[in-house]
Length: 350
Image 1 (cartoon, helix red, strand yellow):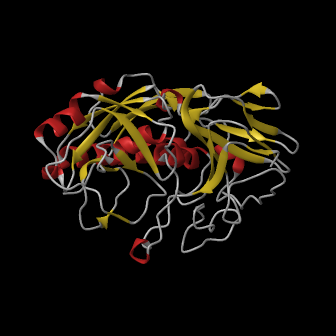
Image 2 (cartoon, helix red, strand yellow):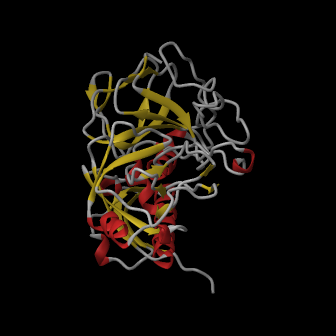
Image 3 (cartoon, one colour):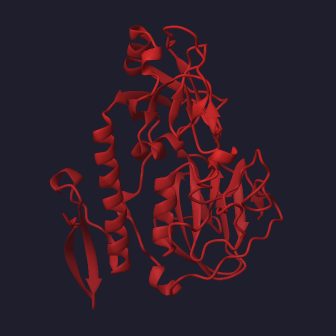
């Protein structure tokens, strides 16, 4: 590493199955960018990536590798020249990767074919900073660190120049977040619930990987602002006595004693992960059934992209999503110097 930046850590999908022992899940904040990065470089979805926050990270490659940069646009360069995101890139020994400044979003991800060769702790390579374990020596990356790249699953040449094209995410400063009602929604007044869904809330400087603290119109409680502590899911929206929402994120505690007005749906957690101080959030209530439908549509999207890229798709076509049926994806594939447009649709067995 040449520079660790503001905060750069090694993360994977998280340390699941350990919350009963008081161990947080941790893992990447932006699961969409994480999974897409691993797809682009031909990794399995469990490989760790570097999560870069805001700015300042820089590294030099000491061997040939295939990498992909996904997530927020932190103006990445290789050897001082701008490089395309959401695309797999070949790097050579001596190449220097750096992130210059925030253009959109908050966090970028560096995926490398073969992942990073570090030991798992409780089944995960994720860094838990407060506990000082996992990842690379249980801490944020810094100047002088040397990390070994793992052995790619297949030929690296097969994974060069893969591109998601228009499927790459863009992160606005005003973010609309869908929420399912929380288990303690009845703990809030009608005016409090109305404020939550009708007003906007800004992300404060006190936000981090543990949670996003918001400010805006007060959300009032019916009675006491405490409950008997219960489990905390990622995206849980707690409302303490001061009436300002706290959205629990990757490094959240395993249990909490504030009532929860709602929970961000899984598909929108990636947008939330890219929210930075000063960004504005708007909340919309959806049903559990609708949230599940959105979740499965996104899973089908992952499968379609994985299939297309593994079978030679150069990039995705430009047909708008609304012109396709749910579960359908359109790709442009080059075979023997000829281009074909292919429509992929997943069929489920009854």
